Amino acid sequence: MQVRNDALAGVLARAQRAGSLPPIFVVASDEALLSLEAQDAIRATARGLGYSERDVLNVDARFDWSKLAESAQALSLFAEKKIVEVRLPSGKPGVAGAKALETHASNAIDGVMTIVSLPRLERRDRQARWVEALEHAGVMVDIDTIERAQLPQWISQRLAKQNQSAGRDALEFMADKVEGNLLAAHQEVAKLALLYPAGQLTLEQVTDSVLNVARYDVFQLPIAMLSGDAARVRKTMVGLEAEGEAIPLVLWAITEELRTLLRIKAHMDAGRPFSVAARENRVWGPRERLFERALARVSADALEAALVRAAETDRLAKGLLTPRTDSNVWLELTELALSFAGPPRSVVQ
Image (tube, rainbow, N blue to C red; front, side, top):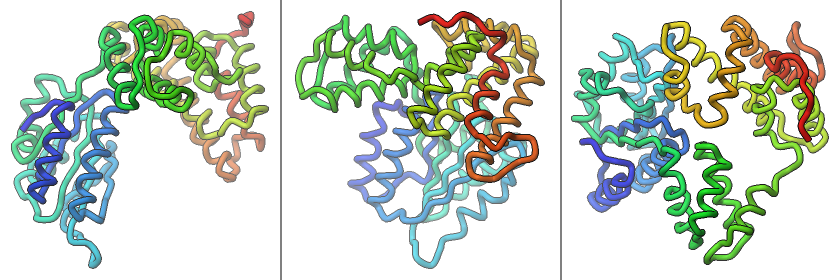
């Protein structure tokens, strides 16, 4: 059975009343926030129905698909029901994976509920036998991408959940500032609930909330990097260190851009136009222009080397010294950010 995201709550409510869940849920989405929320809702319902054990299988190119059957069959002595999560970020299980998923779908085990999370599937991928088997055995939750034109309405709905509302001008302002990033929009909406009581929000209140950020915002760091503004990168890193920003968050902000650049670069090397590759990787608006300029000055080898350095920096942040890193983790983070920032440019105050 295939359902839209807004119908999932009804499916879960009926399952709760019946006292049993479908054996399989497939959550297909390119929106990380909405995918996580859908999975959280499924897990919460499952816990209420006695699913007390949970296994998470992160699938990569070297994943051993026999672990899926092992996990489904291995209930502990202290649990009668179990959740098995299969995280398939590529959406491509390969031949062995497709066969394993098809077999798993056709051999549901009592007391085992499986959540398969993956990106939205293209039309041709939906016709694959393993996808049809999963959908036939359970529920496929298809979550649409929230386009820019839909974002003000989405923000309005989120505000309504916390008994707040805003005019069209305020909603458009927020949508412009988050640039299609649903996680950033979610954070801004949550901040408004902390700052103001229930009721109608003014444009001034929304503007003050959105613009009232720390002087050195970790999420502005990737913009400086993509712009090739080395001076701004250095200044931002000094400010983040002085303000005690969490090192894992800074490293995540850097590596997310590296990974996205590398994915787009691979698509372009395979012959896809930049605009198509950018859209498939959820890069649009002002960020699209920044990515295009950044990709013109960095190679795939340089990006891969930067990701290796990021992994070494992560080890250093955890107190594990590596031969090729400095002992100062903030220095390593700065050098990593500068590795594809390009030559210094004047800093716009």
